Amino acid sequence: MEKPQPKQLNDNDKQILCNCFDEFIREEYIPSGKYIFYDILNNGNYINLSSKEKKDYYEKARTILTAEQMNKPQKQRKLYLLSGKRSLSIIFKANVLILEDYFAKIDADGKHLKDILI
Image 1 (cartoon, rainbow, N blue to C red):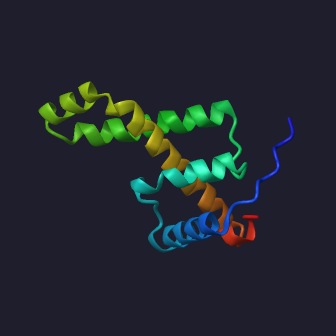
Image 2 (image 1 turned 90 degrees about the horizontal axis):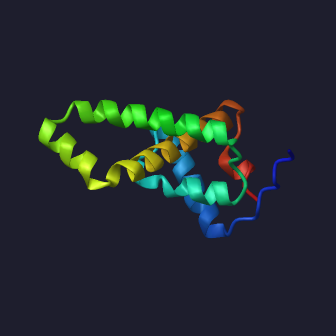
């Protein structure tokens, strides 16, 4: 199956994404609040993962979040599990993991995100 062609992004989205990329290079991680940038890149056909690859990221996110919850008091863990936020947390964490890997690959290839965005 042929990968879809990337879509042109507006200048504001490009600038925000490039700032996020620069921050990732400096800090070596993406703050969890920036998971939304995954949606911009995914909807723009810059990130193209198979269903299996996405599932693998969700499983990795679930494992990480479960480990983080184990370090919290039992009452907090129970509230978290009952709150319904668990599924959203897994999706957001998976999106951050995908972005980190995507940005790391661009950097490893000696490029900057601005070289890829159209």
